[in-house]
Image (tube, rainbow, N blue to C red; front, top):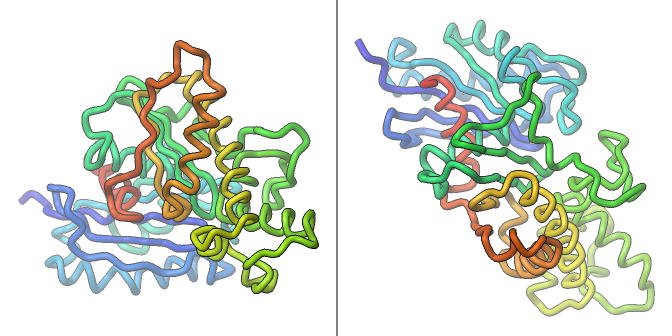
Length: 318
């Protein structure tokens, strides 16, 4: 008898989202837990099991489940391990696919979280008919998935496509989790926006800004966005600076793989044109003429996190 459902799990730097997916790509049930609540991965998996098992029962039991597909930072599609993920508490090499498979008694596959999102976009989203595109996730970190000739680029060891850790400013801002200086993630992630806010508020101590109404701990990319929407000049400068750097990086990526589109999703995309206007301007300004005005910058049409859940679940149908 054909099994009707698959479980998709998206382990993000802050939150883990999961759902039951049918063979038409509909997420029938979903929920989330914290990714960083537990010091030990085994405790995390226990909580994951408590969240997912009632969904399995609602779907008719484990005999109705085809398997589990997972996306995770630094997830290796070849080995099923998370390896030295900078944004997770569990350090070193974690055999997460094996641990989850044993806990649930189901076949389990793993890939990089951003590659899972790219797969979701390719099968169910706005890149459905595209064979050349890049997905960029602007969230806790900067994730990316590269699709060339209809195939996700994974490289010889499963780790290709870490565009967020490419160096965009020589000897620039320190990325505390990796030790790299000047990486894209240190500027264009939610935490990068916060760091830029702190730097500019320090740089212009006499300048009035709504951002000064917040403590250092209260400063987030969301508070910066809210202040920018109210016309705050420093908040808008933060997004201009972030967009300038992101656009330069996207220009490099375009000249590498010549994609039809770059699909953007993640929390920072909620800033919409406040971020995208300077990003688009910077990208085009840094492209050779043969690449200019050819690449679409588009937002994911899938609900937030749905792309990664759907893409992860699709691993089981490969």
